Length: 112
Length: 112
Image 1 (tube, rainbow over the protein chains, first blue to last red):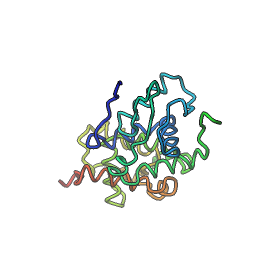
Image 2 (image 1 turned 90 degrees about the horizontal axis):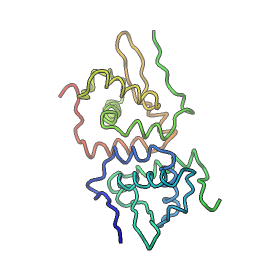
Image 3 (image 1 turned 180 degrees about the horizontal axis):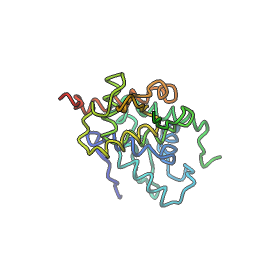
Image 4 (image 1 turned 45 degrees about the vertical axis):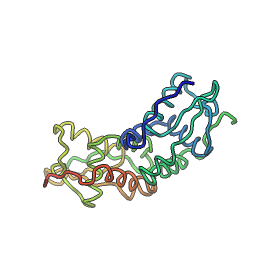
């Protein structure tokens, strides 16, 4: 089983987290995962971008330490590293997700 | 007196704020202004970058809606738009400044 590299908590940098979140598609992924509060495959989140662009956005989030990605069978499952982020940067993720929800009250999902 | 353009609160976008803060020099400026809680000239903040690069960083912060810049005589004075940001994105600025202080306990100033 292929294992994707993730930064350890001590390697997560504030600047990289802010940079990763400074993008509407990546904010949408994070908001979705926060609302779902569970693992989700990429196909659950309709980003309205090409598959390769979508893959890039997930990789940026993973490499910044914001999400975890694991293979389960043929699916790549994504989840938010909320505990790690809340421990490192208390209140940051919540304030960003709340701010994003204010400007995008109803995130689009594949079920819409 | 030259007046610099600033976005109205309704024009301030979360993505632009996060992008502007995803940089160590700009985080240093914001942390300094938050700690000072007053107007400060650029010369008060030692960024260890060239003057033109420093000017660029202040401009990015101003155009994102994070700081206000006004000319007073020959000095350009900077201040944090804390009220605007706290109203738009409650808790965001505080969590970012707190996170930044944890990794940089003593910001460098011109007086060091």
